[in-house]
Amino acid sequence: LNRLLIIRKWRLRMCIQKKRTEFGKQCRFTDGDTQILESILPTDVYDDDYEQRNPVVTGVDTTRHWSETEVNTERVIIRNASMRHTEGGWPKDVDFTEQSDVKRFRKKVEKDEDYQYSMKSLFPMVQKCIKQNNTVNIYEEYFDAKETDHSSEPPLAKGLAVFRDPSSVARPATSVNWHPEASSGKIAVSYSVLNFQDKRLNDPHMSSSAYIWDITNSNKPIVGIVPPSLLSCLRYNPKNLDTLVGGSCNGMISYYDLRKPNGPTGTCRPVECSAIEKSHHDPVSDVYWISSKTGHQCVSVSTDGQMLWWDTRKLEEPIDRLILETNSKAGEVTLGGSSLEYSTEAGPTKFLVGTEQGIVVSVNLRNKKTNNGITIFDTGAGKHQGSIPTIQRNPSHNKYFMTVGDWRARIWSDDLKNPVITTSYHDSYLTGGCWSPTRAGVFYVTRADGVMDIWDIGHSQNEIAYSHKVSDVSLSSISVEGNTQGGGKLVAVGDANGTVSLLEVCDSLAYPKQNEKSIVNAMFERETKREKNLEVRERDVKRARAQEEERMKIEKGEAEFDVDNQEKDELVRLEDEFFTFVNETYDDSRNE
Image (cartoon, rainbow, N blue to C red; front, side, top):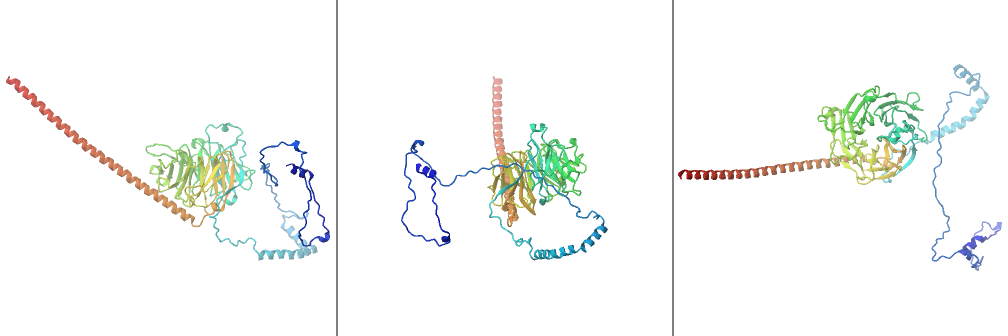
C-alpha cells in the first residue's frame, strides 16, 4: 500500500522523442538488454499514518467507479399557437379584393424584364426537382402486401405519456373513452369520487370537470367539460363524433355538443340535462349510445336497479324504464347494475348488465312478455363473489362476452348460463378489463395493486401472458383504441389519483396471428360443448338421485304398512282373547 501511495505522489512520467523523418516507418522490434527505468524501495516514513489490520480483505480495481442517478426535470408547459395569413405583399395602391386591380398588376409585373429573367433562371432548377419526384416515389411501400409474423416477438408494453388531472384534489379516473376515429388521437376522461360520504366531496377546491385530451399533448386538455355534478361515465357518439353523453354521481344524464360556442377550444357545458326527480337515484354506472334512426337515443344503468332509455333531444324524462328483478311476477330481488354492454353486431335490442351481486343479466326487448325480457345467468358457483365492474362482448365473436369481478375474469356464452372459461385467481382484486379490438384471444385486466395483466387465451388459458406495473395506486379504468379493422396498440389506463397512463403494446399483442379468429372460435365452441355435456350429465345425476330417493321412500312406506298390519292383527287377537275371557268369567258366575 505504501508503494502505491508513493507512486501516486511522485507521478512518474517518461517522455519519448522521435524525429519527424522517422514518422510513418515500419515498426521493427528487436531484443535488447533489460533497463530499469525506476526503482522504488520500501520505506517506513509513512508507518505512523496507518494502523495495521489483520486479517485484511480488500479489493483493488483500476477502473473508475460510476453511480447512476435519475431525476425528473421541471415540467415544461407547451402551448400551440398559430397565425392565419390570408393575403399580403401587394402594393398600397392595389386592392387585392378587386379582381380587376389584381389582374392589371399581374400583367404589369409579367412584362417586367427582371421578372422574366428570374423566371428563366428558376425554371431549370424547378424542372429538375419535378423530374426527380416523378422518377422516384419516395412514399412507395414496397412490401405493403407482405404479412409479417409477430408471433415470435415476446409480449411487451412501454409508457408513452401521462395525463394528470388538473384538479388540486385527487379524483379517480372512472372512465376512459377513445374517440371513434382512432386517427384523431383523442380520449374523453371522466373523474368522480364514488365512495359514500367521502370527505373530498365537501372540499370546495375539488373540480367537477371532465376533460378531453390529445395524446400528442399531455400538458393541458384541449376541452374541459363542465357537468352539473361529477361525471362517473362519459362516452362519444359513434354516429355524431362531436356529441357526448355522460352520467353523473347524482343520477342525472347530460348531453354535450362540442360544436357549441367555446366547445372545441375551451369549456363545454351541457346542452340538455335530465330532471333529477326523473333520473337515477344512485350514481350512473354506465351509459351507451344505442342504434336508432336519429342517433340521439342512449341507455343508462345504475346501482338503484333501474335501466333507463333516453332521447338526448328531450332529456326531461326517460322514454322507457326497466327494473332489474330476478322474477318480475314475484318481485324477489332487485339487482343493482354496476356495468353495461351494448353492441349492434350482437343485436340492436340485446343488452348485458353486470350487477353488484355478481350476477350477469341479459335483457332482450323483443321478449318483453317473458319476465320483461330479463334472463338471469348462473346464481350459484358460476357467479362472481362481488360487484362486476366490467362486462364486454368479444369484438370478433359477439356471441361470447367477458366479465371481470372479485379476483377472476370469466368468459360466457349467450347459449349457456354457466361460464365457459374462468381464469385463475389473481394476486390482487380486479377493478376492470377490456378485450383487444384487433386480437380475438387477448384481453386486459386491471388490479387494485396498480398492475395491468394481459391474457392471451389462444396461447394459454392458465398463465398470464404479460404483467406491467402502471401505478403505485389502484387502477380504476382501461380502454384500448381501435376496432376490428385496425389499431390495438395504444392502451389508456386510469388510476385512483386521476392519472391516465398511455401505453403502447408490442406488435405481437396488437396484430392478429394467422387464422387466430378461427382458432379462438373453435376453442370457444369446444368449451361451450364441454359445458353443455357437463350440464346434461349433472341433470342425469340429479334425475337418478331423485328416482333413487323416491324408490327408497316407496320401500320404506311398504315396510311401514306391513308393520302396521301386523300390529293391527295382534291387537285384534288380544281383543278377542280378552272378550273370550270376560264371557267365560261371566258364564261361570251365573252358573254359581
